[in-house]
Image (tube, rainbow, N blue to C red; front, top):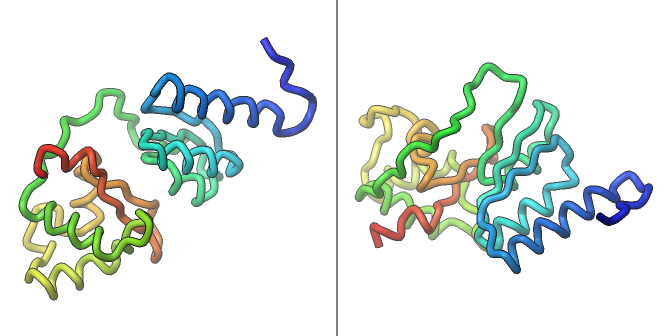
Length: 171
């Protein structure tokens, strides 16, 4: 066992090193970061850049940048139930393929596209109105398909990204 040192972030640095080692040498593909500390934003981002799923678990005070850098973020201390058994993967429909193409067109370096831009662009290009679907809003539609899409927390600049592995069967 290594002594982590005495500095404020000494343990955080060791955890980050261990996570990257697990990712790169042991090919671990899912990480859980239980923290409300924004210092883990870069670690979560780097893990996801290498294809890992990152589940953040933290309090309401967790910074939005950390939340957005995770594949999923579970806020503790809220009334929302935690799903211990994942929902079955959604099957990509023709609409999902159109959404994926739209995101790919308007995403820079995999950052995704603003959810607010999705509705007008899909309507203009394909005549699609989400109000004709059971979910009735784009956020509800996308959230209902976690195997296909990653979403930022709510906000005017919230973005959606598609999960390539979710579309592998449709391609």
